[in-house]
Image 1 (cartoon, rainbow, N blue to C red):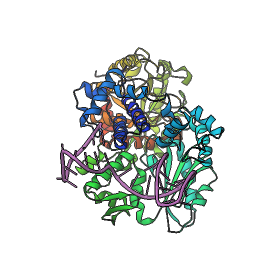
Image 2 (image 1 turned 120 degrees about the vertical axis):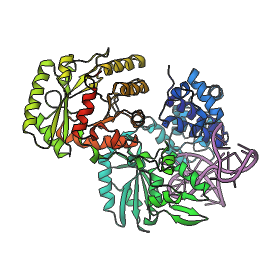
Image 3 (image 1 turned 135 degrees about the vertical axis):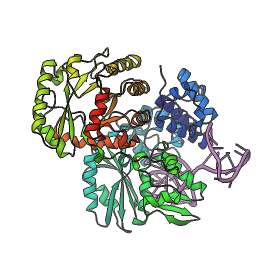
Image 4 (image 1 turned 30 degrees about the vertical axis):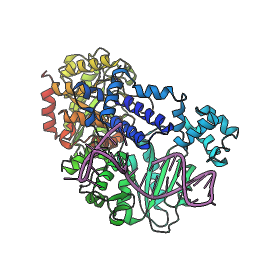
Length: 577
DNA sequence: GCCGTTTTCGGCCCGACTGTTTTCAGTCG
């Protein structure tokens, strides 16, 4: 059983929770939380680092002690301290900490005064009116707690980026119409373009005295108001999405943007630098000895601590601050850098448009080439192509290319990678194509070793070009399959083939850190729409966002190549292994 | 428990909102 970074982070969080409940030193608790954040966002697996003889205590926030605990967790899945803490704490009590409105102090009181250590017990106590009598609690707290427990299970979810976009547009239109509002910007993880967002952080610039709180909560989609003040208001929309509004003056706009864009880890790192320079950064500005010296623009905030501006997509404290300091920030890929698209479907399999409609739509999206990659026949549900139908499809593409202007169609296939790693069409059929996109669509539940071997074997095929949606995840439906991505990346490099960043809103697959890892290993990424409809090329910008989070530059993106160079790259992989 | 261009000891981000308080603790982001 491999221990993943997420497992280690979860253990550190649990230790932090339990220590907090036992009223340990708050900075000790914080050290565990910092370590959990470092580990969970670290681009490489701890197991891998250790195997390669790396020093864990070189990681930020990890010292000798925590490095030892990581080793312990990797070896046996737990550590002595967690075992001891669990043994001396009532079972399940950390669940209470994750209920909105409850923190360590209140959970401690609930347990020691009333013996409550599970959400169910808490709900009964609230309904029986036993909580209001506790010191520090009252009737209002008791009511809120009951509501929070009831909603506890359904919350704690994240939303695919594309799904919240509709809310964003409606909210922006509504807010811009408010009196006194000069600017509305969505900050938070939405601005950092994370693949999922937990809530929306909306920054509103308004003149002093603009009384907005009532206006904000009057938005028609608002189902519940969590808190409401002159500068900060939190609501829950009807579908459960939480939205936090912050109102600032124009002079603080830059500082507020930095602050509310985050990430938290990035901001903490900025503040530490500021501290060393005897500066204080908050959401209103940068201060020296109480005097404001910057904050109207984001650039002024970064400049105050000697840094150039850092693109929002990089603000995760994964090395961007050091890169900025050293003048080594990447020149991130942009949507306009994409010259083509290497994954699209037509009515020949499960697409909804013909060849020509797709070609015209791709050209309208600013692309100069488009690979037609319909499914292969084992994917029966998608009406996949067998060898005979593929031959006819190839001829149709050739004929169409002769009359198309401003766009070239490439002949491809999204061929199924069978459970044993063979490809779903004979070599002779694949040899006639410009590129072969391989994908796993079945047996996503194979054990890690087997799944990895399956993909490595497929990559060994002489005609294999690009591995599509490598992790196979679908938001809200299924998680990523078990894979040794390090090996797959190394193998792709050795075999000279490529990996896909699939842009479908429910996929966004590969992950950002995998893009970075692949790129560092010298493997080019195809940012591919997987379009099934003429409108789907708009998804490319989602993929570009994810690629930017993965530190990709245009030079690392396969479909940023002009067609002649692309053909050369593909030819050098096709059939030469 | 971590960390060091003040420091190997003594710090550790900082402000808003709520509810129960009569000046502030707890929680959140």
